[in-house]
Amino acid sequence: MIEADGDYLSWIKLSLVFGYGSKRLYKMLRHHLSAENFFYALYYHEEKTATEQEMIAARNLPEELIDGILKLCDNEKINIYCYESEGYPEKLRALANPPAVLYSFGSLDFLNDEKTKLQFIGSRSPSQYTKDIMPNIIAPLAKLGFSFISGYAAGVDKLTNDLAREHMADNAVFLAEPLDKCGDFTEYRKIAMGGAVISEFAPCAKLHAPRTFTLRNRLMTCVSDALVVCQEGEWGKGLDNISYATALGKRVYVVPPGDIFDPRYFGQRDLLRKGFTPLFSSADIVYGQNKDNSSAVDLSILDVNENYLYNPTVPPVKRGSKKKVKRMEKNKRYEHKLLTPQMLEELSETQRSIIFALDTKPLCIDELSIKLGLPAQELVNEITELELEDVLAQDVNKNYYLL
Image (tube, rainbow, N blue to C red; front, side):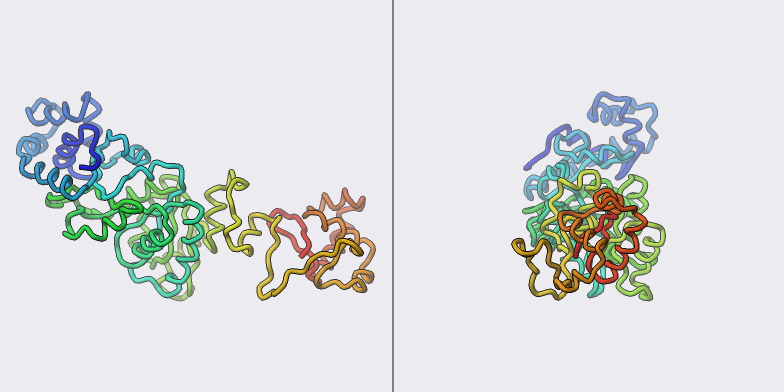
């Protein structure tokens, strides 16, 4: 076994007795010093709050089943993380029903680091629109060190996993079934080279847990810092994750529909109507997740036409422009690509003063008023004319800058 610390054997037995996602297990466990003490109290019928069925389940737990689980994990290099293991994901401990045991190909250490983790959800039959936009969202985020969380279904889940691996980003895949159900671990091992494949369902054991996808989704959402909805219909199963995210206070980003009349995007339509955050580019996620410390985030790798919205000191580049106009420093104080010297002379004295004032840095209307010694109301009309002439514009912080 690669990793299996803590009293994992007792935790495996308790998970099989109480089932997966059990709140009752932890409610009863707090009256005992350890998981081992708790299990043996059940085994010898000494736990007064236990039901007859629970005590019988503990006593009749097949030893060959436990041996089979341990042997498979040992042979296939499957890691075992129990609730008290050092590498157990810390965020999961906040759940009322955290998994007693996690089985994984690959280490879970990256789930405890400080990198932002994004869960991508969406249709199993994504449209071409979704296939086209996902690389443009994920690639820049991977370069910035974001990690990615997904399920293991066709469509958006697989796209997320493939793109994360392509760009060398940490990637966690959560299963709604035991690791040994597919019988072939080749793909799991490939994913584990840059992340992990995780299940809370014990291998070798018959799966009796109802709502396995619901149990899986609570884990995915809990370890994620935010959710990204790429494509969902009105009744898409991925929408269940939104309830978990909202309850945990996590931000939800929604890609705008490719067609507002296409039922394949009605889930996104409804989420946007409810006020969830629209996602137009990677910059929206970068800024949204680092809003309190955006100055420390390197936005330089993002598209400049998205970057300037959150970093007004970087002016947008007009689409189709071939050359960047350089300013002449010797003979003229200012040269604009649309304003010739003759046109500059035709402007009013106040308009020229505004242009020269903004030549240094963006300024708001009050700062311009102080710098020029003119009433703000008097400047408004002049500024409006310059905006109509595409000489200057206003950013999201209400600062005017030269185009």
